[in-house]
Image (cartoon, rainbow, N blue to C red; front, side, top):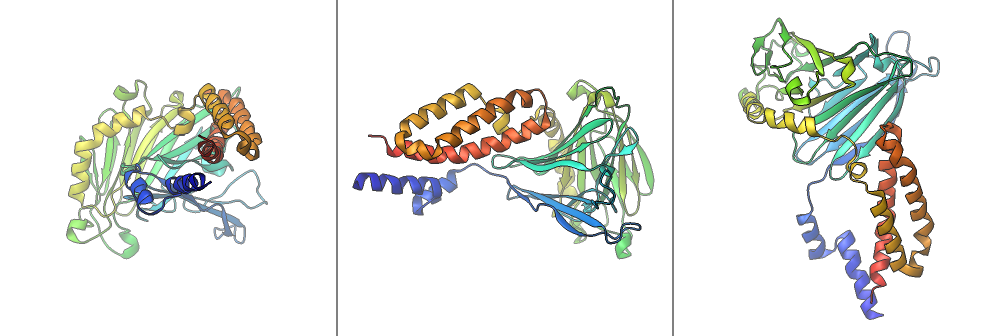
Length: 399
C-alpha cells in the first residue's frame, strides 16, 4: 500500500508539476501557443438604421509568449434581419499587437462574386487548435459558396498565417474573389492631427504617399508598410507592419492575379484580385509593434523567402487531425483500458464513445468537410483528457 501511494504521488507530480520535478518538466517542455476566445459579447448598435440593435463582438487571442495576435469579429446580429449582417468599419479586425497597423476595427474584407462575405451570417467561429500551435476559423455560408478563413500562430513565429478557402455550391460558380486589406502603419496620423510619411516597400518597389502602386504578383511577394516619421528609432509610433502572399513559382498555380496599393496619408489600402479557380489563397501578416523600421526591413529581407516556403507547405488542419491514425489510436486505447482493469470502468464508455466519433468523423474530415474536421479536433482533445486518467490507472496497476 505504501509503494502504491508513493507511486500515485509521483504520478501526480509528473502530470501536474510538484517542486523540482514540475519545474524540470516545465523547463524542458516545448513552446506552446495559448488561445483565448472571449465568446460572443453583445451590446447595442450605433450605425444609422441600427441604433439599439443587437451587436456582436468577439475576440480570439493567439499567444505564443513572445508575441500575441488578437482577431476581432464585429457585426449587427439583430433578429430583425436574421439572414444578413451589417458592420460599422469592418467585420474582421486585428486589435493586437497594435491597434493601428492592421486596423483593429476592420483590416480584412472578402468579396465573393461582388458580394461582401461579412454581410452574411457566420455559421461557425471556433478555436480549432491550441498547444503545439494555436488556431481558429471563421466560416460563412453564402448563396454561391462556403467560405472558410483560418488563422494560425506557430511557436517561434513572429507572424500570423492565414488560409482562405471557398467551395462552390452545387450548380453555382465562383467567378470573382477579391481582398481588401487596411492598415495604418505605426500611427493614426490624421486622427491625431499629425503628418506622416507612409511608404510601400516590396522586393522591387519603394513608393511613398500619396501614390497608387500597381503590384506584380510574381515579384512583389511581400509588402512592407513603414512610416518614415513614425519610426520607433525616432521615438515615434508603434512600429511598422507587413504582409505576404504566395507567387506562382512556389504554389504552382496562380492565387493572386493582380493587386494595387493606395498609399494614403492616413489609411493604406491593399486590394488583391484572387484567382477564383484556385479555391484558396494563403497570406501571412506581421505586426512589428516595438520594432524599428530598420529592424523590420532587415528581417523581411533575410527571412521572406523562408517564410514563403513554409507558408506554401503548411498544413492548416489541426495537427492532431492531420497526424491521426485511427487503427493505432484504437489499438492503444484497447490496450490501455485492459491494463487499467476494473479501474477503467468509470471511463470505458466515454473512451469507446470517443473512438466511435473519431471513426465517423475522420472520413468526412479527409474529404474536406470543414465541420467534421473542426468537430474531430474537439473530440480528439476530449479523448486525450480522458485517456490521461486511464493511463494513470494503468500505470498504478503495473506490478
